[in-house]
Image 1 (cartoon, rainbow, N blue to C red):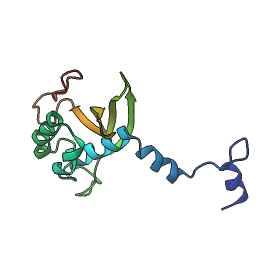
Image 2: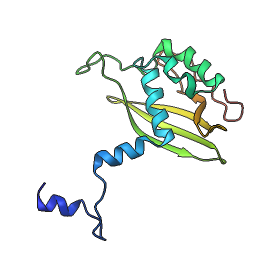
Image 3: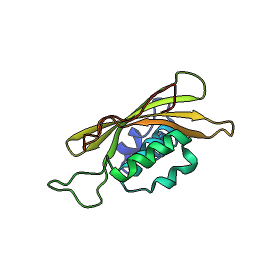
Image 4: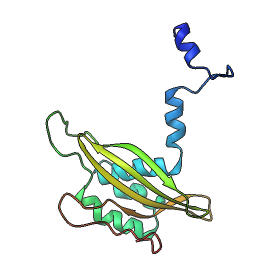
Length: 154
């Protein structure tokens, strides 16, 4: 590492800043970031729906079972795409309407196309976050919007 790069990796107080890889890993440990990635992989057909069995409440899991066979977030063929290219989470944000609840969104990039994913996480008595509801908006097949009701959980 050059001296200039070493200096740029230090804060104004002289303490070392985390590497970009460490920053990415810390961000991915945040529950909404982790769930956004797992939901994307599941809805892109890259992860089996049962991988989220213990991470989703019944209504959200039922919705995943409905959506997964459609693979609504699977990358669409086009110039330069490879068979197993997966769309990426471009941005993921959240709001905390009350203690133990995260309502999150993710912007999913698929080449030039941008999709939205919304989901609700609830903290269980066992201190584990579980997906309580999700919505992907209109699907490419035209089947209409997902079933997202922040109060009813479906």
